[in-house]
Image (cartoon, rainbow, N blue to C red; front, side):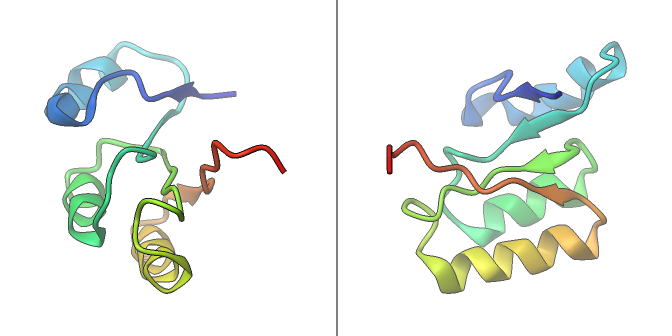
Length: 85
């Protein structure tokens, strides 16, 4: 169980305040498009689970780079996919 996308990407700095009073892990990232956006998010220690959307972040190769970043920060990865299969 986790809180998914509590704020829009332009308000990500607010995640620290939200996480401080919350008893659940925070997940975000489905609307981020570059590994650099994920890097900044991970470096600030604001998130417990990242959710890159492979169709928006640059495909499988870029998704693997984002996954490696998450691993380096010991943050869980839950790839996001809004498509029905």
